[in-house]
Length: 166
Image (cartoon, rainbow, N blue to C red):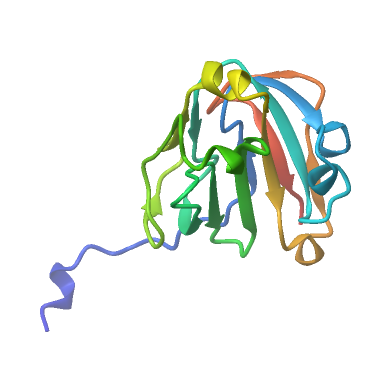
């Protein structure tokens, strides 16, 4: 009833690329100093050696998982079906949330550039852990045409770091 008054919703365009989720040097996943990531046990992806202290959504999507106790990682499901995990630091799960703040919860719809995690880089270093912020596509088999852009200084929200090619 009165459907002509409803605003027509255009279908959301499928995610084609991910922007840098934090500023810093982008490295291939094989160079991440953690065997779980570098061996691609969780999937393929990239690492960023961060120059900032805040992780942002690389595109719009739905928060599918939040490591609520440790606050160091957030998973997202994108509208193209990709499932990504963004993990701040190496072995930082051992910090049990100390030095981390998370700004989203499971089920939240987030926009590109929305704040996900903030961390205390000095505290991470004091605890003896690496700062590399890793992004992994956990369902890689569904995206044979994916390309990771590495070897450059990325600017959060501006630099393309992952491309989903058709």
